Length: 151
Image 1 (cartoon, rainbow, N blue to C red):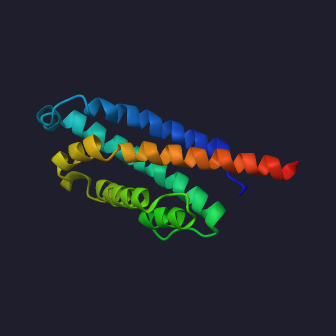
Image 2 (image 1 turned 90 degrees about the vertical axis):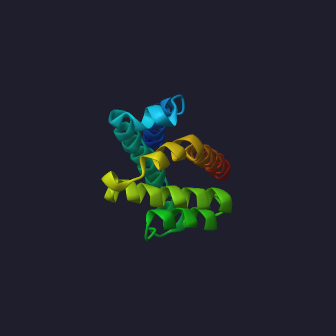
Protein backbone atom coordinates (compact mmCIF):
# COMPACT_ATOMS: atom_id res chain seq x y z
CA UNK A 1 0.00 0.00 0.00
CA UNK A 2 1.36 3.42 -0.86
CA UNK A 3 2.26 5.51 2.16
CA UNK A 4 -1.02 7.41 2.52
CA UNK A 5 -1.56 9.83 5.37
CA UNK A 6 -4.83 8.26 6.52
CA UNK A 7 -5.43 10.85 9.26
CA UNK A 8 -5.13 13.62 6.70
CA UNK A 9 -7.49 11.83 4.32
CA UNK A 10 -10.04 11.26 7.11
CA UNK A 11 -9.85 14.95 8.12
CA UNK A 12 -10.42 16.06 4.55
CA UNK A 13 -13.36 13.69 4.18
CA UNK A 14 -14.80 15.16 7.40
CA UNK A 15 -14.49 18.68 5.96
CA UNK A 16 -16.16 17.56 2.73
CA UNK A 17 -19.01 15.94 4.63
CA UNK A 18 -19.56 19.03 6.82
CA UNK A 19 -19.66 21.37 3.82
CA UNK A 20 -21.81 18.91 1.88
CA UNK A 21 -24.38 18.89 4.72
CA UNK A 22 -24.66 22.68 4.44
CA UNK A 23 -25.13 22.41 0.68
CA UNK A 24 -27.88 19.83 1.22
CA UNK A 25 -29.91 22.59 2.92
CA UNK A 26 -29.87 24.52 -0.36
CA UNK A 27 -31.63 21.57 -1.98
CA UNK A 28 -34.57 22.20 0.34
CA UNK A 29 -35.27 25.72 -0.91
CA UNK A 30 -36.54 27.04 -4.21
CA UNK A 31 -34.26 28.61 -6.77
CA UNK A 32 -36.08 31.90 -6.28
CA UNK A 33 -35.50 31.85 -2.51
CA UNK A 34 -31.84 31.02 -3.11
CA UNK A 35 -31.33 33.80 -5.65
CA UNK A 36 -33.06 36.33 -3.36
CA UNK A 37 -30.58 35.73 -0.53
CA UNK A 38 -27.02 36.95 -0.96
CA UNK A 39 -26.16 35.22 2.32
CA UNK A 40 -27.33 31.84 0.97
CA UNK A 41 -25.49 32.43 -2.32
CA UNK A 42 -22.23 33.34 -0.57
CA UNK A 43 -22.50 30.39 1.81
CA UNK A 44 -23.21 28.01 -1.06
CA UNK A 45 -20.24 29.28 -3.08
CA UNK A 46 -17.93 28.95 -0.09
CA UNK A 47 -19.12 25.42 0.70
CA UNK A 48 -18.78 24.38 -2.94
CA UNK A 49 -15.18 25.58 -2.80
CA UNK A 50 -14.59 23.61 0.44
CA UNK A 51 -16.09 20.45 -1.07
CA UNK A 52 -14.09 20.70 -4.28
CA UNK A 53 -10.85 21.73 -2.55
CA UNK A 54 -11.21 18.66 -0.37
CA UNK A 55 -11.91 16.40 -3.32
CA UNK A 56 -8.88 17.80 -5.12
CA UNK A 57 -6.66 17.51 -2.02
CA UNK A 58 -7.56 13.83 -1.69
CA UNK A 59 -6.95 13.36 -5.39
CA UNK A 60 -3.55 15.04 -5.27
CA UNK A 61 -2.48 12.98 -2.25
CA UNK A 62 -3.41 9.69 -3.91
CA UNK A 63 -2.07 10.69 -7.33
CA UNK A 64 1.34 11.50 -5.87
CA UNK A 65 1.49 8.43 -3.62
CA UNK A 66 0.00 5.85 -6.02
CA UNK A 67 0.65 7.46 -9.39
CA UNK A 68 4.13 8.69 -8.66
CA UNK A 69 3.70 12.21 -9.96
CA UNK A 70 1.89 15.42 -9.16
CA UNK A 71 -0.89 16.48 -11.52
CA UNK A 72 -0.57 19.65 -13.57
CA UNK A 73 -4.06 20.86 -12.63
CA UNK A 74 -7.02 19.89 -10.50
CA UNK A 75 -8.78 18.46 -13.53
CA UNK A 76 -5.63 16.52 -14.51
CA UNK A 77 -5.60 14.96 -11.06
CA UNK A 78 -8.85 13.11 -11.73
CA UNK A 79 -7.40 11.87 -15.03
CA UNK A 80 -4.54 10.29 -13.08
CA UNK A 81 -6.98 8.49 -10.79
CA UNK A 82 -8.84 7.30 -13.87
CA UNK A 83 -5.56 5.98 -15.35
CA UNK A 84 -4.94 4.16 -12.06
CA UNK A 85 -8.40 2.59 -12.49
CA UNK A 86 -9.62 4.20 -9.25
CA UNK A 87 -12.30 6.22 -11.02
CA UNK A 88 -14.59 5.33 -13.87
CA UNK A 89 -14.32 7.58 -16.92
CA UNK A 90 -17.81 8.91 -16.19
CA UNK A 91 -17.01 9.84 -12.58
CA UNK A 92 -13.65 11.27 -13.61
CA UNK A 93 -15.28 13.48 -16.25
CA UNK A 94 -17.89 14.78 -13.80
CA UNK A 95 -15.20 15.60 -11.27
CA UNK A 96 -13.10 17.36 -13.91
CA UNK A 97 -16.05 19.61 -14.73
CA UNK A 98 -16.58 20.34 -11.06
CA UNK A 99 -12.88 21.12 -10.62
CA UNK A 100 -13.11 23.61 -13.48
CA UNK A 101 -16.17 25.18 -11.87
CA UNK A 102 -14.22 25.38 -8.61
CA UNK A 103 -11.57 27.37 -10.48
CA UNK A 104 -14.23 29.78 -11.71
CA UNK A 105 -15.57 30.18 -8.19
CA UNK A 106 -12.14 30.88 -6.76
CA UNK A 107 -10.88 33.21 -9.48
CA UNK A 108 -14.06 34.89 -10.71
CA UNK A 109 -16.18 34.63 -7.59
CA UNK A 110 -18.37 37.67 -8.25
CA UNK A 111 -18.92 36.92 -11.95
CA UNK A 112 -20.51 33.49 -11.49
CA UNK A 113 -24.10 32.91 -12.56
CA UNK A 114 -25.80 32.24 -9.24
CA UNK A 115 -28.50 30.22 -10.96
CA UNK A 116 -25.77 27.87 -12.16
CA UNK A 117 -24.49 27.54 -8.59
CA UNK A 118 -27.98 26.47 -7.51
CA UNK A 119 -28.27 24.02 -10.41
CA UNK A 120 -24.90 22.43 -9.61
CA UNK A 121 -25.93 21.94 -6.00
CA UNK A 122 -29.22 20.39 -7.08
CA UNK A 123 -27.80 18.11 -9.76
CA UNK A 124 -24.04 17.62 -9.57
CA UNK A 125 -22.86 17.79 -5.98
CA UNK A 126 -23.78 14.15 -5.18
CA UNK A 127 -20.88 13.29 -7.51
CA UNK A 128 -18.52 14.26 -4.69
CA UNK A 129 -20.13 11.80 -2.28
CA UNK A 130 -19.80 9.07 -4.90
CA UNK A 131 -16.13 10.02 -5.21
CA UNK A 132 -15.57 9.95 -1.44
CA UNK A 133 -17.19 6.50 -1.22
CA UNK A 134 -15.06 5.27 -4.12
CA UNK A 135 -11.88 6.52 -2.45
CA UNK A 136 -12.90 5.03 0.90
CA UNK A 137 -13.46 1.61 -0.72
CA UNK A 138 -10.07 1.87 -2.44
CA UNK A 139 -8.25 2.74 0.78
CA UNK A 140 -9.97 -0.09 2.66
CA UNK A 141 -8.94 -2.58 -0.06
CA UNK A 142 -5.38 -1.28 0.01
CA UNK A 143 -5.26 -1.67 3.79
CA UNK A 144 -6.56 -5.25 3.53
CA UNK A 145 -4.01 -6.09 0.85
CA UNK A 146 -1.22 -4.66 3.00
CA UNK A 147 -2.33 -6.80 5.94
CA UNK A 148 -2.34 -9.91 3.72
CA UNK A 149 1.16 -9.12 2.43
CA UNK A 150 2.47 -8.65 5.95
CA UNK A 151 1.28 -12.08 7.08
